[in-house]
Length: 253
Image (cartoon, rainbow, N blue to C red; front, top):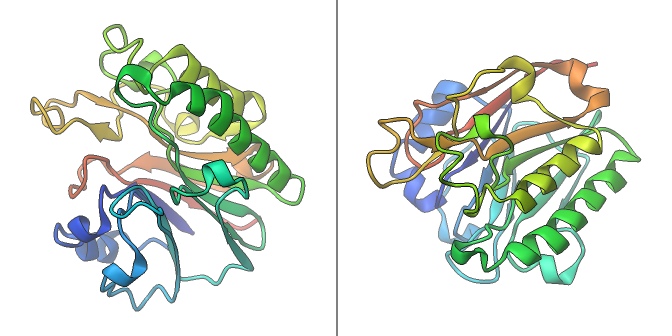
């Protein structure tokens, strides 16, 4: 089983930049998207091999949003966290499968001058972790998406100069630590211990060509299901967005 997660930075834009060729080449069984920036009605999606399509669009047009496209029928699908203050931006979809819950998430960015850091740290991160732990009482969880944080210094090119910038504040990193301390595993780091592996690059200063990036997109899994994960990696050469797709390959228990 191959699961791919990708912040596409606008699904209508990425469709014009090789999206269908990407799917034909990599053939995910389940594709999770973040920052789709569209409602379902605005997109003429040509994905006949993915009959199970789920969208969660933001109330605000052209902003945020998530989607899951699957070849396999989920047992259940739910949008959002069930908490009103978090549920207007289309940030979460949960799909239940036989052996696990799959959650795709687009974590709120703390923004320039850290305008949303308090909300992110004290409200979103706390409530999202609680949500994951409630799911985990029923069966293991795999969650994936753009978490808008580089966990450790190894996860971005320039940690010193970015220490107090959005995505690498102590508060955001602590939020990610809380996922780890709660028993979730950063699957990529199970297979790759070295630096220089990133999932997002600024559009400025030829950052991608120079590999001046950040690893802010993740597949995390409950310890109970980690033994079924065969590999976890980044498709760094896939273009179309300022993010690269990320992949996990799994087998049944």
